[in-house]
Image (cartoon, rainbow, N blue to C red; front, side):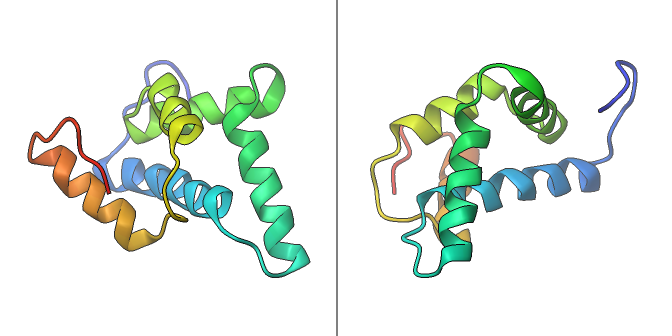
Amino acid sequence: MFSDNEVLTDAERRLWAATIIQALIDATAEPDTPQQKAHKAQAHAWFTASVGVTAGDFEAVCLAAGFQPDTVRHFYLTYEGDPLTQRRLSQLRDKLLKGQRDATL
């Protein structure tokens, strides 16, 4: 997906982070429509795949966003709260940036 020596700009990293955020929102949603159910299933598969193209894409996206894939996967697999929203994820990001390592929502 990316060459080993490619340097991404902050804007590019934010774009890849937005991909992860949308997948978290989709994966934790309470779907009302068949399309939302499909998005939830696809997002879950993306977070949990351990081999194949899907797993490779997940790892590349996480690294492009500046995150360790194992950390993102662990967050998803252990999250037990209400469905995530853009606002809730922004609050978590802000807490983490302020150094609150045990940030919870």
